Image 1 (spheres, rainbow, N blue to C red):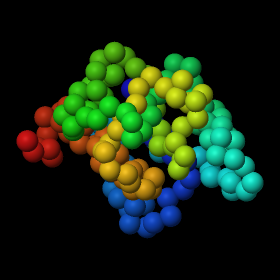
Image 2: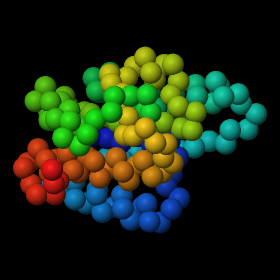
Image 3: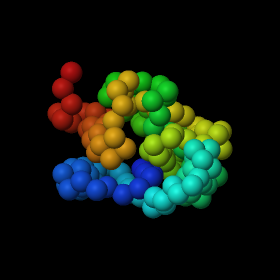
Image 4: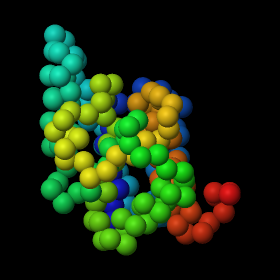
Length: 156
């Protein structure tokens, strides 16, 4: 299995880039992982709906028909770290070849992306910046694999 994290826009903050690099390096021993940043375009005179539609088209252009698509969405299912690792482990045992997680733009996901999604997960009831979510989520992917392998990173 491989895991991809799709994100709208780039990471501006150095400390977030450093954290992402740290967890990307740590994940190499567990999973084929990719972080794909979809370039942000200027909003200009577009309405919110037009903007979401355009972002949705960009997201869906990165997803194949057989990919298992999971939206990171505040209205998604909340899980603790063990439940999330169980989710990842279950997808591995179901022979999912490509697990794709998506962090959308500021306005959320278009109806087309919502319709295509196989699942929605919420990282928290709190609202985080899209850049910070990247780092938090990558740490959780790493944590999930250490839990699955029974390694001492996660403490109950």
